[in-house]
Length: 250
Image 1 (cartoon, rainbow, N blue to C red):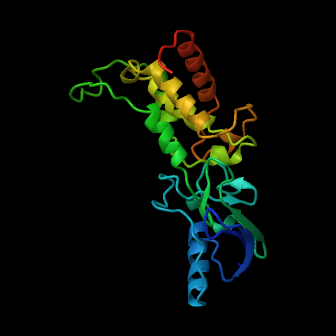
Image 2 (image 1 turned 135 degrees about the vertical axis):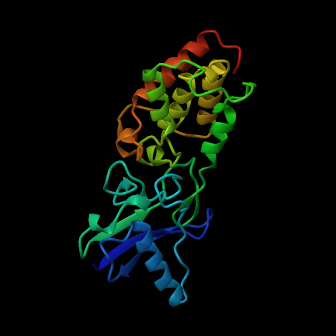
């Protein structure tokens, strides 16, 4: 396939960016989207041009680094996958593909398609963990947990922190990400001791980072590569209101 790829180019966080068009030839339908970018970058380097900066690591849909906004959708036209799992057979010969970074004030552009997602790390540092001393590792079946709770906690824990929920939301809300982390620990016995403090601190940090409010449009769940349910947001809201009713933490 021969394609036209329009890519956001921005030297650094302080410079102005712009869309730049590139022609990419002889693209195999079996290439992943990132492999297509590798080919494009090799061509740019051979011409003495600056390659396009983009985040990537595992290329297996696990790490969440491949954050690209493709033709108006986070991670591209397919649902339930990350950019690295998107293959070029999803496009047609002669297509024009527009690629941008995540657009959110809390995710400032570092260079080209790379954004700083440190805001997510700071939210986790605020309370998304279990800090109490739980002793040695117990046997898997030593602590009774209902299958319903175990399954729900596992589903929430599949969040990879890619930021697609923020990029897809018209308000740039991080509610789905924060809710997934809160739900995961709220359902497990190990998370009960810090349950109230956790939700207060994480929500407070989310607001301090400048993410927008959730208005339940559902775009986050639709574009989430792990298809995390909006039910987690309802859980977060219940946890937050319950914690605030007797708050001494934040």
